[in-house]
Image 1 (cartoon, rainbow, N blue to C red):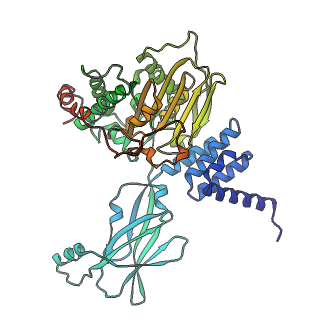
Image 2: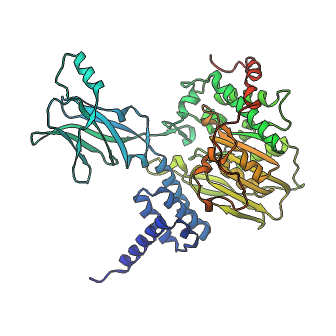
Image 3: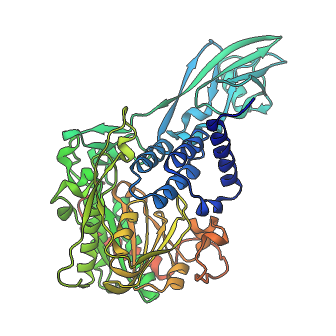
Length: 527
């Protein structure tokens, strides 16, 4: 049978998908037309190869200018990867079956493909096993071989002496389209349970159709409304982090700055469908950080940047269908940093932005997808180059920009999460060198600070992460960088051999007592 042109095309794309799995570096030389980039990304997405699909689309946007379709697909894939599901179990029998898996919180979509399911069943028969049926796949037998004396004790308290000890099970399954569990005894299969993954909504529609995050792992809506209230630990944890990080960075000869990216509901609470809490997590933690940064024995130059009032001047600082600020919002934050450190720009400097239509990580969760306009930074001249990018789509992503005609001579080292990406993009037009590391929970990594020798170290976090303080570490082995291969790290970083990972100690850990006493004057938190 003669293959059609479309058949040859799909075979070629299949081979490309296979080669990307075997040699990820081959993506750098990939050059396709627009339709093939989209088809290849969709092929990888269908196979739950999210990172590969995203990397293909990044390459597509590098190859083809103003590739709007690739940007929209990238947003949809990123959102699909982050989609949360709750497990729903429907009993099919009076026989008792218990799944420990149901006690865990929401599960991201990639986790449904190979989910570990553990539990026990009411079993009195000598010979018995489970039969698991995943949608679209042949059924398979799972043995009941895990001893559960706790289950036996439970039934004995109820007067049942016939429970078999070997009643526990554990197996992995793809529950993307659901599965059923049956008990096989004496050649008869008794259906016990239907298990399904129910997609959580994760989006709230506010005033003027602005979209807001909900049902996420950080419980953003509860943080905003106060259902998850502010505590003393929230304030002291981040305040101690600021003092510890500032002291460590000062010891390395650099200046330190803490940056908080407010959620758009913190900046525009009137757009959110719910009323805000009377006590703000963001304002409480920021106040504690500011107090920590002005302690008499602290290093000079430590500061906190969180320009809520400036961001509130226009809605264009955020994206209607996304959780992040726009490049314009990032520029507002960069202005605050420049002022904090007394860094002037040439007279007449005026940033330029263009309107770009985006779906966004919230708009892609809607059916049909919603889009909006994003204020996108327009690069000033041709002097900025990306000299290193390991192209990871997770913690450990490293980008290095160099500017041959920079407006400022300083070198910037920026640790943070996804919101720091727009900040680095803006800073690259201003400073001589900007290094961005995606590591929002572990920062700064002092080995990297010493290797990079920056003038300013910035640690960025987002308001919805303020329930969990970041940690300072000495060695890269205690951070997201530990998982990177040699070619995923810059050649000019001569990092020391790995040492035991862990937070700094000594003087940095002894500051807590003085800080704790000072923070008793901050009354923003609930006891």
